Image (cartoon, rainbow, N blue to C red; front, side, top):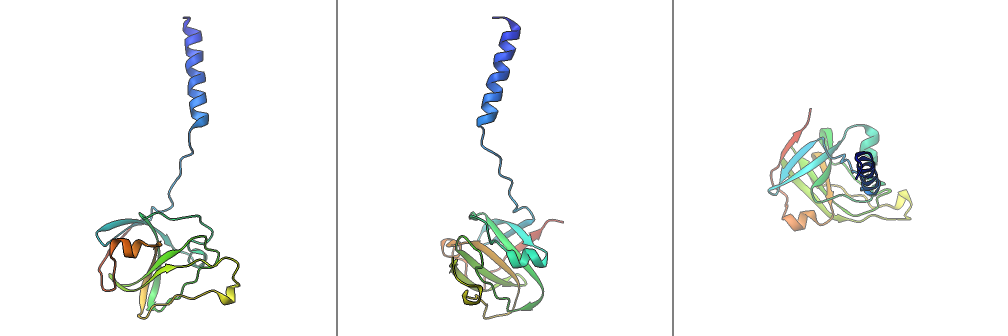
Length: 154
């Protein structure tokens, strides 16, 4: 076989293979990690007021290895709703390095007016909130009083 023909065939095979390749998904959960219930969770930190108000709204899913962390300047009882959510989540309220409350399987509410959406609030003050895939808390046995380690990338 002629060398030019061979190289042309190789180029065609490479081109065909790259056209059929699946796109690479880039995780947005690269702001750090949380270790809780002997599991490591990659986190995305909601930093700005807009990111905090949006949370996971509009996304299609979250994996068991991912979570969204909200950090508040002062401990309080931050309430969360499921506005524009497309899936259920577990909500974990944290104060310092301790889980202080949990809402399991917070249900998304399609076609419900904002004023009628259920609010999820902790019984104790919290300075952080972690949103996880629904069922995570039960699957890994997380409970109020559990300690965790948070490492945020600089």
